[in-house]
Figure 1 (cartoon, rainbow, N blue to C red):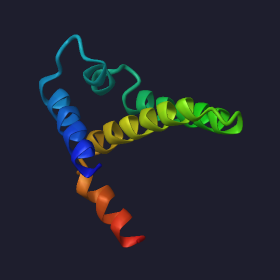
Figure 2 (tube, one colour; figure 1 turned 60 degrees about the vertical axis):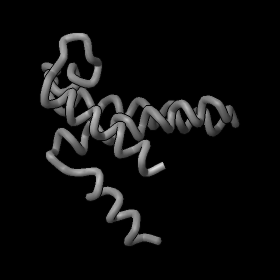
Figure 3 (cartoon, helix red, strand yellow; figure 1 turned 180 degrees about the vertical axis):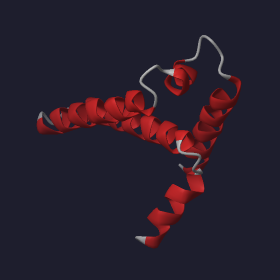
Length: 94
């Protein structure tokens, strides 16, 4: 699992650096709303996760959870944080 997160975060960091025109991830870094675009997406995805959980829709729960993790990683990259910052905090809570 950590490898998957590390690989995804690496792609996000690359998109932040290279800003390809056809990349959704890059568009989040250049959005006119700035970081609010990512914050809004996180809020939206959290709401969708809650609704999926309420309806016990396992496939949707997984889908919305993945969207939350993705947008969270984008936010970490936006704030010039590293994946290890998150993983260290999780390790502290074990």
